[in-house]
Image (cartoon, rainbow, N blue to C red; front, side):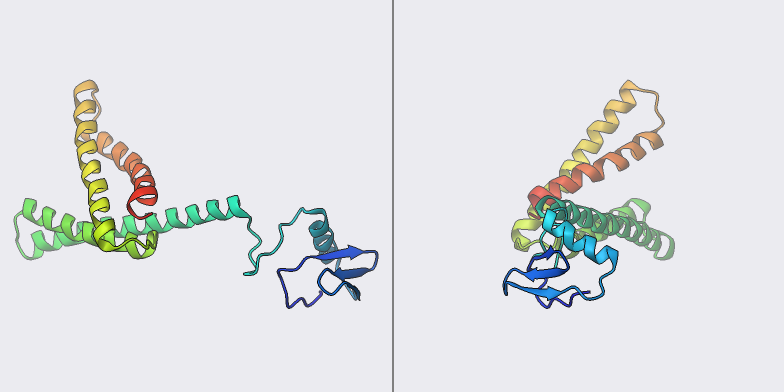
Length: 189
């Protein structure tokens, strides 16, 4: 394989030599595997995107898709961790410290919401916004979710015979997608 210390340069395959476009001189191919030859030919034909200075082969649209996917995965991990923390704190406060269930639930939810915000702020979205700007936007999305959940549940209870568990589960599946977009494009942008 040709040892190229400059991955951002393209090489052209011409016959049995590689022409370095910066040094404009043929370099012997040496013992190239068929895959390596095809790789160089594909570069010439434009089938493989030009390497950027950081060595990344992803173009703009593909890079954005991969960034969105990475953000969505981190968002999911933080969300699941927040749910686990919410249940654990609520249970601990009620079962171990004998705090009333409603108060234990509210405290667990508050702790999980703060953890959720910090996880999304520092890891999921890695925002450059200040806490003063991001926190009120995050809380606006949380409150919107609470209001929409209440309206959604009330509508389905009054219009269908669905069990409350199905209604809650359907919102739990739908809301994270809406919340992700709102947090990504508005709160933590």
